[in-house]
Length: 131
Length: 131
Length: 131
Length: 131
Image 1 (cartoon, rainbow over the protein chains, first blue to last red):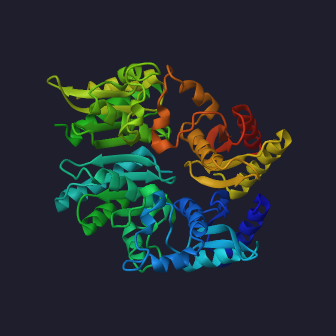
Image 2 (cartoon, rainbow over the protein chains, first blue to last red):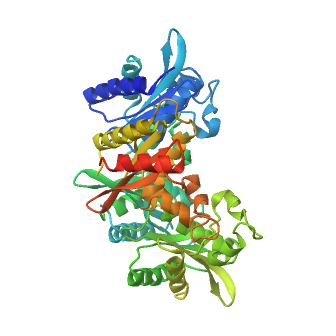
Image 3 (cartoon, each protein chain N blue to C red):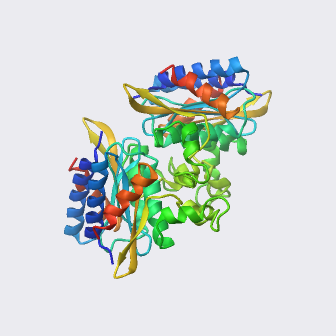
């Protein structure tokens, strides 16, 4: 089970990466129930990304998948097109969410929003590696 | 910080442009927090555009981007497809929203809705130029 | 039918009253369909009152009643208790909304929010008198 | 303007108080626009309080008032009864939210949820004192 101390370590690692690439981010960590443990908005990060970072974390745990991969399945013409209309708007279908695993089991997720899809995903990976 | 007097000057410039092109518009101005300062619906403008104009202003500030550009990123296959499901339906991904800048810093946004995408954007630009 | 020019005259009268009593307000005017025509947030007025002012105007037209009077009917134990759960949260049951009448007919409404209930109602009355 | 570093100092002070009284809490800090800067859920704190802490912070800034005081005004029979139906369900009318002030001006707010009303308010006060 992820504790607040774990979430903070994950966020610190993600922040470090975001600072390295020079892009302020919103970073959120959710637990195994998909519920938010902690969130930070780095100075000058997008206001609209508060919500998105939290929902990317939720989505990654809800479907045990990186939102980058869910994005592929959710484009027009693909098998999950329209999934973003479910769950009262909580499903984010673009890069930045990654499940957090311990011993091969999903125990939570990180969600990052504030830059390009590639940047968000890279920052989320840096955070996930710190678990 | 944008004051009500600034918002009114911006709206007046946008209205002038809308009158010139003969298309009644809804025009909204938001502050640096994305919160509405002022809104007008010109006579005979669409009722459904009240909400859209306010949300275009919010979106432009939330992501510090013209909604015209966000539209490109948000089409199926592109990196932000699905972003319109976030933020409880407040994200508008078509032209008409523009960030308002002072000394290179985003201090608010204007949102315009009532005509074609090109018309909305042109009216928003006229408004933004009046800050 | 109320035009934008009417709404602006109403708002100007309400602003003047708000300035006199020294309480910055949000002021909104809706038409006969309950749809927003114009809104202003005076400098330093509450952010949370943007929504409330717009909804007070809607409520006053929706039920052709001052929200001050609807408040009485909507307290615990009274006949309309619970009405604020209807209409997707748009029903405001405290003072500050007043129907706008022409020749005895309701043609729209004004909604004011930013001070005490008595202040909001007084400012709304000043606005309504300018139609 | 509150920075992330300020929000963290405020949260740390609130957590310390929560630990002292032995009640795990959700703690959120919002900026002058009411937008979330940071949130933590202490280990074993209520899941349902994630949302409440964030909304208490928003409410305190939206109306520049402690939610403890707004609670008084919002009971049946009082002047703001029904205000919780506004702003799409974001208005929290029970103790735990406090505006953050610098030089007498509201620059943001803290929201705390996880215990009794008195506990939430006490933890919020400890956090606010750290600005």
